[in-house]
Amino acid sequence: MGDWIVAIIEAVYKFLWGDLITIPLPGGGTLPLSLLVIILIPAGIYFTVRTKFLPIRLFPDMVKAVTGKTEKKKGSLSVMQSLIVSTATRVGMGNLVGVVAAISAGGAGAVFWMWVTALIGSSTAFIEGTLAQLYKEKDPLYGGYRGGPAYYIHKYLQEKRGGKQKRHMLLPVLFAVSGLICWCGISQVISNSVSSAFENAFHIPPLYSTIALVVLAAVIVLRKNATVKVLDVMVPIMAGLYLLITVVLILLNIRMLPSVFAKIFQEAFGFRQVVAGGFGAVLMNGVKRGLFSNEAGSGSAPCAAATAETDHPAKVGLGQALGVFIDTILICTCTAMIMLLTPETLTNGLAGMDLLQEAMRYHLGIFGVIFIAVTLWLFSFSTFIGILFYARSNVAYLFGDNWISQTAYKIVALIMLFIGGLAAYTVVWDLGDVGVGLMTLFNIFILFPMSKKALEALKDYEKRKKI
Image 1: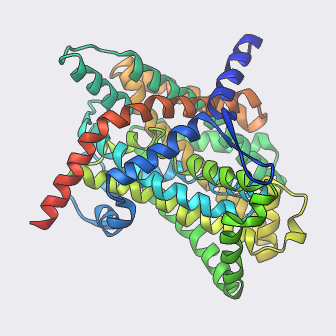
Image 2: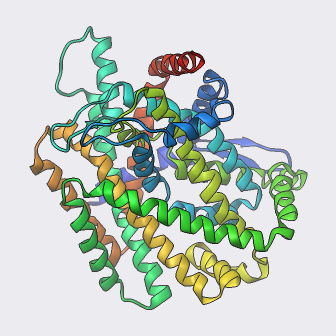
Image 3: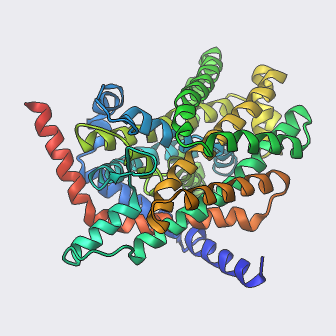
């Protein structure tokens, strides 16, 4: 890759994720803020207020939205299935190694700010999920429906221009391209993580585990409608098994929980962190972990939300809001508890996957190391399947309804999956982060003027509920 391309990628990465401003704190510390944090946190607060604190007020409705039965046409998905697809991509490596990194850098207090970010992020997820439903359209290739930010941004701009028909517009094109770049970059990160974990746990050479991963993925993604069927089975099992094992471990150490929660709250607000100048690290590591994990505002999950068949668009938004809770409040918290219930003397000096595997070794012996390797494989594999489901609507928006472009993108993603398993190219990892950062940038600003439509749908939903 040319030096000038690498320089551009690094510059954009720094612009999106680097410390744009730093706020001085008592004790000599600072609070660094990146552009995306500056955008996403106020957006989450704004939508939480506008929806009248929807995550708390309508939590029972979130559960009902995904568990209720709705008649659906052939090829379309239920609200539950759209939630499963979005959960497949939300629940990934970030729920394991990402949480470990947040606690390592920010301490136990980072967990609290991770929870706060999920709480306000679920309101953003509601807005974008509902908009995806309101502006969805029929999918002539796969059947059912398709949509997402590329489509609702296009429709919004078209309405602003008096309804004048255009095949493409710049902003939705930029979003779609950013998404495809992001998902290709993530493909490499996925395979690299899987091959590394299997080499550590089973001493399997990366080439063998990568070939197996690519072949299995190809069998699924190159078939017309195998993706959702596989995720329908895989996601509940993998998430359920991980929650079961971790909850059992937490219950076995239940006497330690009061001290763990005390540590979380003390370090989240503690005077010691402020005076020592460490409050910025506590806050930002928790916030970033929450944002990266639940994807609220990035525009990814709406690509799944648009495919659902429902009797009211707000129900899909409620289902997507619940997805943020499942990802961050449940799964990320379970990982955090496993870490905080492990003696620090065993994990000092370790980082990333090594740290997590050592924590699981403490709780479950060698089985814990194997369990985490297999869990990472399942989480990562489901993420790859899910992002290629997302890519369908973006490919269709850019290149029209044809199997050539759909298949070509899948092949490119499979090639990236293979390359990533054999070597880690940092620039491609950065490319994935640049992609998701640009997606968020293009999506979040359009959510503000378009949120009126989603809020009207919420008002109508609550009005009908009273009848």
